[in-house]
Image 1 (cartoon, rainbow, N blue to C red):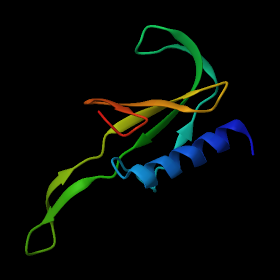
Image 2 (tube, rainbow, N blue to C red):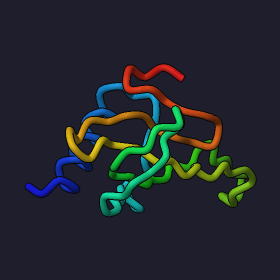
Image 3 (cartoon, rainbow, N blue to C red):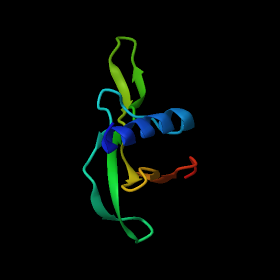
Image 4 (cartoon, rainbow, N blue to C red):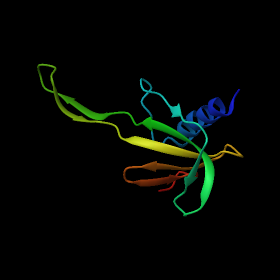
Amino acid sequence: MNPKEQIIETLKKWITQTNIISYDDRIGLDCGDKELTELRDRTTKEVYVVSFKTKSTNIEYNEKGEVVSFFEGMYCFAYFDAETLELLYIHKKAGYIEVDGSY
């Protein structure tokens, strides 16, 4: 299994275990190539970034079956250390999710 496949499997397992964020199965998880990036602590490191979109929520229908309310999922980015392939954190529109699941 190559590093990108390992990272995607690790992220799927983490999402299932923590159950604090979801991803849209139809879109999936996309792992980019290794890149040199400035992290949120201002250090520069080689990382893999996995992009994904959370599931859309709060779909409401009227009595005719028409959608009346819909909240689209948000784009998120999971940062993995390129050397150890460990999850560093997840960046989302409203902040960060730590490896332990805290915000």
